[in-house]
Amino acid sequence: MRAPQTRRRSDGDAAPAEAVAPLPPVATVPPVAGRARRSWVGVARPLSPRRRLTLTLLSFLLPLGLWAAVSYLPFLWHPLIEVTEPGDVAWMEPGMRVPRAAFSEEVAAAQGAGTAVPEGRAANPVYLPAPHEVAVAFWTTLTAPPPQRDAIWLPASLWHSIQIIFWGFTLSSLVGVPLGVLCGAQPTVARLTEPVIEFVRYLPAPAFGALMVAILGIYDGPKIAIIVIGTFFQQVLVIANTTRRVDPLLVEAALTMGSRNLRLIRRVIVPAVLPQIYRDQRILLGWAWTYLIVAELIGTSSGITFFITQQARYQHFDNVYAAILVIGLVGIATDIALALIGRRLFPYARAEA
Image (cartoon, rainbow, N blue to C red):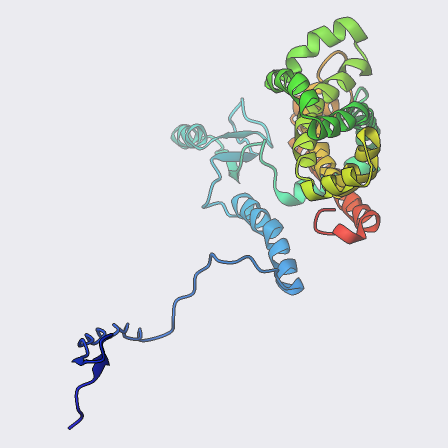
């Protein structure tokens, strides 16, 4: 049997060692039968190119599939009846869309009177055309002049709207970008300008429409002004916040080496945040498009907004959807082109550009 351990006192006498309590046994978790569950939320990892392409296609195909299902499957949602043969009902015409209840009443009345019964097929409201109708209208509006004498051609109206966007966003950027950088780099300038900008940015840009017409006339001037008002104040605040993200150690190093004031902004701060500012401008350009429809209703109607309102007046909603689709395609094509340009301009910061 093993002798008990002893510890030496300071006076040389031996004393029995204090008993050490044994550690409690570690609790073990029994293994879960079956396959372990995986969390669908975790550390973000880049997707493979194939998976990214698949998800991108699905993001477009899913709403398109829902639209097609509602359009082509009568049992989902077809609340109206499109008259194909009016029979002896005087007020009906071929192509007219009437509620199911009214159509059923006319059928019952015709059967009771022994007259010709109207015929029809299930249909959606006129404001919800099928995808193939919009596709045909899309091609027709781009390639053929409008049949109405007073109507305008979609390419001409689109080009006019693009010019409004270009001039409005350019004028906004010429002032907004330098002021935003200056606010982000100099706290005194920021405190002097940002409070009033924070206040004005909550004022709706269309509220200035009547004032802009009184000042700039009824043509393109007030439309460009609305684009400027809608993007300028947001632009200053966004770019100022981006400028404040520059690494302070980088600024301190530049100050140590003798850079001061505008030289510091031009040679250090702006190059450090330029890729992110470029990305901010791409996002802000999308805001400019959102103000376009309201801007073109001010003064004389013009551009693609006039095309949309005119086609809606004629109840050509397939052309309305085609025009909206054109706006989306022009916007996404512009953003993709700017993204590709940003990769060439800023190869050292592709994630930001």
